[in-house]
Image (cartoon, rainbow, N blue to C red; front, side):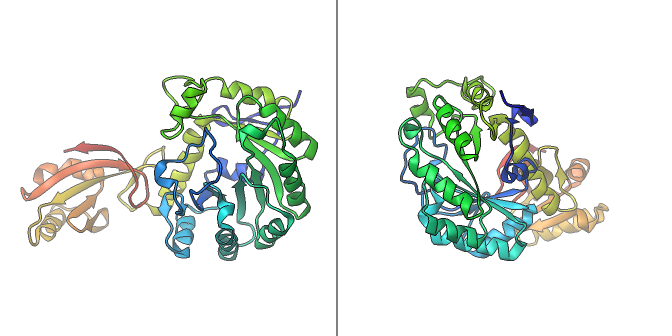
Length: 351
């Protein structure tokens, strides 16, 4: 029986790799290299929109190196998690981005990578030389009880070239076999509470999986499997569905909001921002006229901003002066949204 530490939102561990410690702080940028993958894991949660050869830094579509650096700066990233799809199907891109991040942010910028492949010594040496700090192997569930020799060999080679190595799998039946291998190799094992998604739900139902409750996407029994296996794992970690949403994502949003919010944006405890919008009619000088009206009402210039045919303004000010706004306004509302360009709108309140 291992000495298990309890983390937030139900997460538990006997060991935490550095990549997980930074994720807990919301300080890891997610670099999605490609949605292409040769495997067809029934539990894969990736959306249909991302199952293409496209790259994202968090939610930002990457068209150039500049996009990656801007996104990392926007959230004050202390590290990057490289994922997919299968990122090592685009090896040169992975190596280039590792070098880019290390060059821009220094060797201390921690980078970990997920892969379902078992790279050979030559590739692992290239990854190590570029600056990869940590690698997490994801063997498909259908081979856990049969032949894991290739993965064991790749993990040993990764450790030999100075990359911290481990395994990362969903917490489902058969995970105990993976834990045995992790113990034998002396590497870590991360187990994620299994979740339903829009793209995997039908395959999951066919296999008898059910929701834990009506309030989350977590699979019934997955957490219990993870905890049971963790008790026999020397260097293990169970990450819950609730932790990813309530802690990890929220803290990443807060980091972004604190660095990008305008003076009049209100930052919520969930990392979203709240502000008011005045949508002007498509008439010449309408935005100018309303801006002048706001100044005449005593609204400081720093508490509103013109965006094409919209004026963004502090929510509390808009609520106070809404009856004084002239009639050539199309719409007034208060919105709450994710704190980045094109971020999802959480709530919209018409005024």
